[in-house]
Length: 417
Image (cartoon, rainbow, N blue to C red; front, side, top):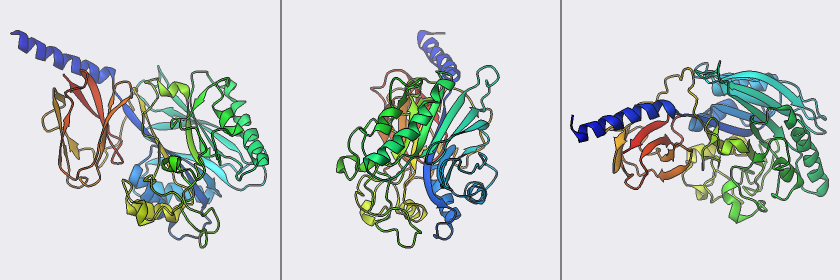
């Protein structure tokens, strides 16, 4: 065996080792204020929500403004499981705080998670709900991994009195953090009704003196309300007027009210890692300040078809974010698009990585490339073609992950020699 053959054999051997050592699974999360579900008068809301879900395909779907158990079942059966038994839900528990009938819940893919426990944090306005999910991994007996999800709906409106009520609510949450393992992976999501990063409630959520320090993945402090510099993160209102919708907000997109916060360990721990630049106000093309989300003037990456449905569904936009874990799920159902992306020249490359896509997705597909540390290396925009040739000559040698945007949960591995 000559030196070249030996070198190639070592590369293949290392690649096989890396495949096991750096196995990665992507977890897609979404938070959505579904606005007075199911009583808001827009017809066919379950189908509208189903269409929105299909655009992103979340593994974890956190919601607020569920009114009844019947509403929860309608979402589960007719919006999420209308094509098969994919999702399960948390129990519906009537609000124990104040007089509000609105409640928070979580829906999750049963192939990936088990609902371990639920709790309610009682506040002066509305409950804050905790849901602990256990990842169904092949090593769950020896190394169980849990996600502690908190879903909230804080007091609305401006003014110092409402700011103090929001602070009181989140203080009830942070007071429970000492009860968790300090290494817990924690998500705090919800309609937080915050106008600036200087608000006491926001400062309390990110207080480094808390038992578990939380972080805002966007890291975009400032005064968010009606500020064009923050147009990309606004999530309310999708509408100029609430006439015909049974209430809600109008005035167009001008507020960052909806959030997914993570514990700081999720910014660096490969066991449960936030993927950089995956936090988005879903449907916001960064050109819709004070406009309705379905306006043709708000065109861009997010399609007109999606934005039409977002307009009809709620006065809020969903917030989405992706996580990555180095654990392997026990089983992943076959995804209909799993073979729509291929490496025609193989997944070991030196200077160029060739990617081939099926014609059914050629107008929609885009990619991000990450290294093994969860850092995004580059983004590949859609150019309406079946073939992509990516220059990776400047990449350091090692394993990388190609993640399609909005198409599937599948992660495609390749090795840079």
